Amino acid sequence: MPSNGEAPLPQRNHPLGPLRALPYFLLLTCALLAGCLPGGEDDRRLAFAGGVRLDSEGSAEITIVARNVSDRLFAQDDHLDGRGEVFNSAQQLLDRFTQESIAKLTAGEETTVATWQGVLEPDTYVMRWTTARYGGVELEFTLLKRFGVLEVSNVRERQLAPEPAAQSPG
Image 1 (cartoon, helix red, strand yellow):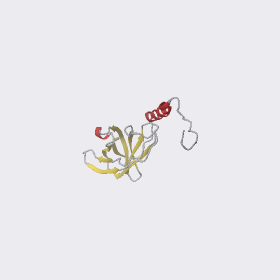
Image 2 (tube, rainbow, N blue to C red):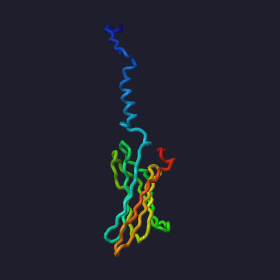
Image 3 (cartoon, rainbow, N blue to C red):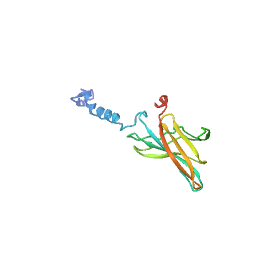
Image 4 (tube, one colour):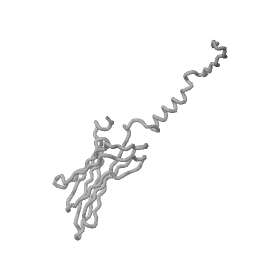
């Protein structure tokens, strides 16, 4: 009994003691395992695709699109470090282009991450777009001149795997 004459406060012991927090712990654990809460970035996955088109003046435009192929939000990445290179059939490097970041993408969403434009002659070309962490895409295509008009032909696309040491964020 307190010395000031007041009645003691009743003890409120929960019958389950420390187990009363168990449902909250289990709910939090399930949410983390299901990917509902922010967690590691190891499962962030992108698939890249390329496209080639010609404008009316014969200038080629190569577009690189990234798609979030995971089932969760892809957070913005300011260290994408995407690199593109365009080669002709003699394997001469014609140009390079880069993209440093990518915006956030919801599951299944896609966005254009890079565009290259240039004047190309009839020939076969390879455009290679790579990122260390997410892989990339290689696009091989031929430009033909038919009846005085340049057209895109024989487009082949190949996915490039991420670099093994770069898959885990550091």
